[in-house]
Length: 127
Image 1 (tube, rainbow, N blue to C red):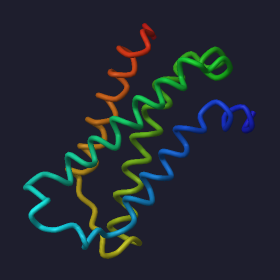
Image 2 (image 1 turned 90 degrees about the vertical axis):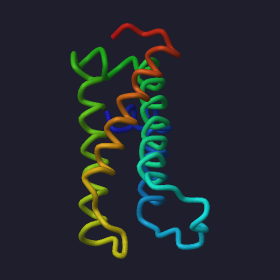
Image 3 (image 1 turned 180 degrees about the vertical axis):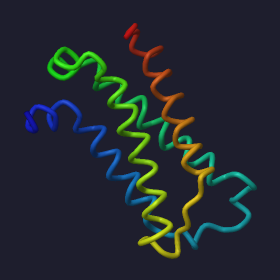
């Protein structure tokens, strides 16, 4: 079963890994002029929009888990929300000098919701 999961959702897993890496490093080399008041929240939302679209795309091609588990899409959503929350906790504890912010997690959730909605529109699934 883990093999099937990896083959089905490998793009989402890869994107989670990329988001984790990007969330773990500090970007001091970005000029202050390129930043604006809520630029980090926008970046969070955009990363999770992409994750939501990719996850929904893979969900539409899933022939195992969504058939076996009635609420699979809800499970995917909750898992990705928790993923964002765990990253924020790690930023507040282990990934110094990064800091944890509730607003970042909220941006993640909003982006993920928008991404799943966009995926639904793009791929025409009425789940």
